[in-house]
Amino acid sequence: MLSTKGIVVFSGGSAANSLVDVFEAVRENKDCILSYVIPISDNGGSSSELIRVFGGPGIGDVRSRLVRLIPTEPPSPERSAISSLFNHRLSSTSSAEAAAEWQMIVSGTSELWTAIPSAKKELIRSFFNLLNLEILKRSRPPTSTFDFTSASVGNLFLTGARLFSGSFESAIYLLSSICGIPDGEVRVIPSINSNFSHHIAAELANGDIIVGQNNISHPAAATALDIPPTLPPSVRSTRPRYSIDHFDADIEDANLPGSLPTLRQRNIKFTKDKDEDLPARIERVWYINPYGQEILRPANPRVITAVKNAQAIIYSIGSLYTSIVPSIVLKGVGEALRSTPARQKILILNGSLDREVGPSSHPFTAFDFVEAIARAGEQSRGLAWRPILHTSRSDDTLTTSPSSAAASLGRHGDYLTQTMKAHSVVHPGNANSIYRQYVTHVIHLSGEGTPLVDREHLSSFGIDCVKLYGRKNPKGMTYDSKALIGAIEAILGRRGDSMAASRSRRNTLDG
Image (cartoon, rainbow, N blue to C red; front, top):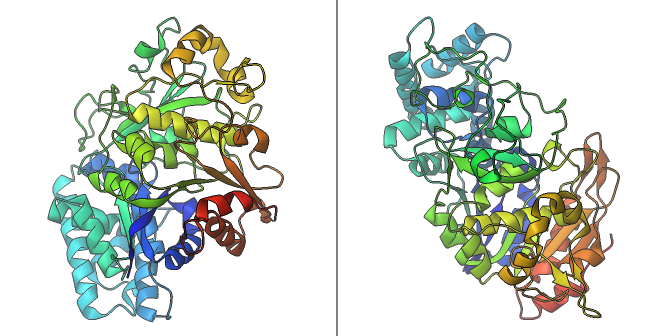
């Protein structure tokens, strides 16, 4: 019988897909429900074209996780064919070739249908045909036409199902059912349950603001529009920077007239291999309305329920500010993370550093990752963030974290006295540490290019560290699945007994 207390994993799409088997092994051992919380703010690649024409949430990461969860045992030609169909991308070299390939799929003549039973094929095709009709209805040549280049077939299916049912979660349920994912064991939950688009913006330490997830993680074009630097941060944060170059006002799409041009681009192209450094560190991320104003969006109620009924919370590998934080800053999530009965809240650090946790001259440390999560949680609660201080047991000397002090004192130095009054100033290791309210354990790799981990510093806030030795690859370090399973189970306790918490402290493994 499944445990009523589940495991909740906050993650994005492709990076965390490599750990699906790890999380499934832990779930089986704990005999509980596993819930993946996935953000819907992606506005790049083929998702940008669907958002431009049909509106709706960014569905790429949701589709990616659902297809990755298709059972592989026992081997099944049908499941393999369904995986290939929904993972398939249309031609990236020619829009005409991509459109022709799409018509073969819609008509049922594509080789991708091989090994898919007729009944299931016709069910899937019905949603493809519905979407195809909607595309034709919205076509206004030569300006307003749908670009199929590099389109994900799975994304097209989810969009058709959402348009038919009028419900994003119904579309997810349908795709999950077709993929054969056991709903009673594994659930994919969008962080926001909505039929509308939801975009994010990020403020850098130097006051710059970047609009749109794609521009934050791997920009395709410059997004700067001068904003007087003398304006206070509260004003600057509501006035996004964007470029109006290349925007064609004649294009008719699903976005409101007057919406930010950067959120109305056609089929946004990007590369993850040549990302330039950000000019300064990202300080925070928030959601914006179609006019660029900051809003506090409520989270999907299913996310809140899953967190409040969790025995463990896991922050998976992935882009910190576009995969993890967008789900945490939503209204209700921060309070749920603080009040959940889950005793273990585990951060699995990335095996490499990307653009979001730079610049390369000042990369994020493990503590910076923890602080970003805690700050997002407090932002979710509607609270302003201040550098969190603690006092030394020996002489009560006021101190800040070394990494935060360098980046934050310039802007927040005037708040030091206020911070002492606004927050409970805690002794190192105290369970009331604001950081420990969100993260209790950090699992990390040792090797070149991995985030720096100061175990003693993290321990001063009551956070335990588990170091593992992974495998080297051209982009950094990757986790060994068996070692990671062992580390998570050592923290959680293999059978969930009452000694799990104390044993997890003794199992801060090296190797």
